[in-house]
Image (cartoon, rainbow, N blue to C red; front, side, top):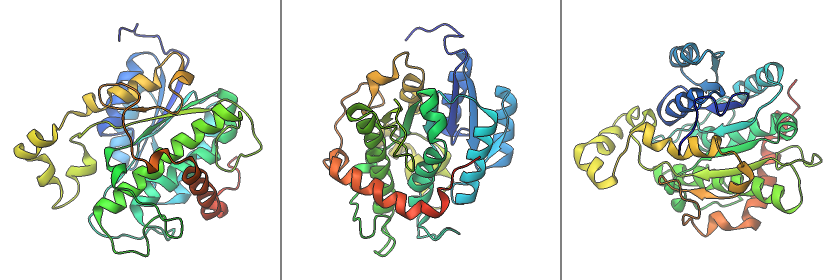
Length: 302
């Protein structure tokens, strides 16, 4: 796609997980096109470095702490009158069960609950901005098997595949529920904002198998993914290649055209996804369950 350097001038794009990997590559590409990019990351040194590079404020948040999500939402609402694009890109994968300070399995909270909460707290601003939401999903969602009695698999034996797969399936259902609400009844599609109407739209993408910190920082897990053999088998790509779909969706001139669509690394919509990810009834039920689970944290940010 050809684009002038400043074709996104005047647009504010918030990227979680924006200080490394896919998020950093996308932040740089979108900044080069003139957007005001707001990167959010977990590691202070990395966030400070990318913020200085982009001329942005450093926003540090660990999504394993829901208080961090609330504080981040408050800063965004104070400092940005518009949020044109919100990218839910932060994520983690772990080898064993870890319980957060909020009492949730860490992958479920970091990859799904925290994005849902951030979206909910920013609901009014997103509606006012007619924002587009981009979700970094994964082909791993095919492994997800969400049980609404235990959606985060907290009470079942832990496996990496189920933990990560469930969180990514939930994210895809989340994106499609936002899209469904926007396209069918005009509701903003934000958790905790059922009475607000607007045109917030959403899309999701699978970045491919990308060599990023989410894998290489996992002790004992990284080598299996980054070895020469694994790279050939999985067709491991660079963060820049993995970020292509994100950049395409965040910079699209008509975001509504991508509403509800799921993209592949080749930036083609209509990619196959699991039957569960297309289950609108499951998506609505999960949304309701998540609102209830997060209710103590859904007091409006100021």
